[in-house]
Image 1 (cartoon, rainbow, N blue to C red):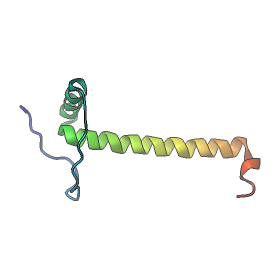
Image 2 (image 1 turned 60 degrees about the horizontal axis):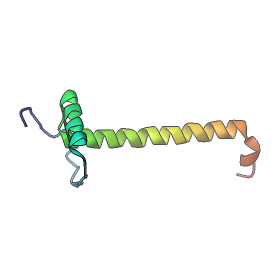
Image 3 (image 1 turned 135 degrees about the vertical axis):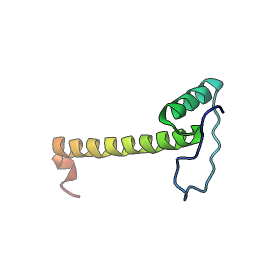
Image 4 (image 1 turned 90 degrees about the vertical axis):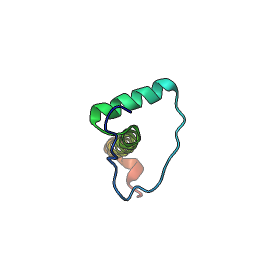
Length: 77
């Protein structure tokens, strides 16, 4: 790589994960990592953490909305 690819993940990150990707995906991840100033692997770790956070926020919001719209379902809880 022609740019600085220093790790930007925590020192406690000891596991390595293999990911199958198309050439297009690999190039896209590398370009996005470069744009953020991190390695391709660090970008993937960041993206995965963001996806988990978005999913958790969505589930929390959906449950809260469901409780407000259908309180009868939750009275027994």
